[in-house]
Length: 140
Image (cartoon, rainbow, N blue to C red; front, side, top):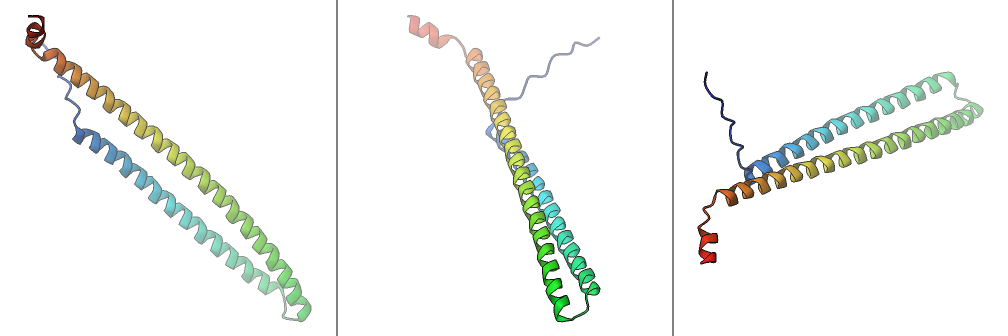
């Protein structure tokens, strides 16, 4: 049977901290890109839905003056509905951005906390591994 000695923990370096930070930033950028694509898709869908509504409304009305006035009122209502939808989407987007920002802030705080802990551990190991010559010299 061979003995298994625990692998010494690698010291935390600035490169490792930078790498972890870059990973978090890359993940955030990917999330932002996915979110932007989703928003664009929703806007395109709203636009197409609006155009379809206008076409169906046009098909329902002949082009007399009274009908045009009625069409104007219906279009106003449709615009109001679209504006409400856009406002709702805007609120949802703001909330999701806020959630993403909070999550990113928590991730960065955790990364910095781990980095600090690793740095303190590394410094403690260095201090413990240094010979006691300095303390012996000061006592003399």
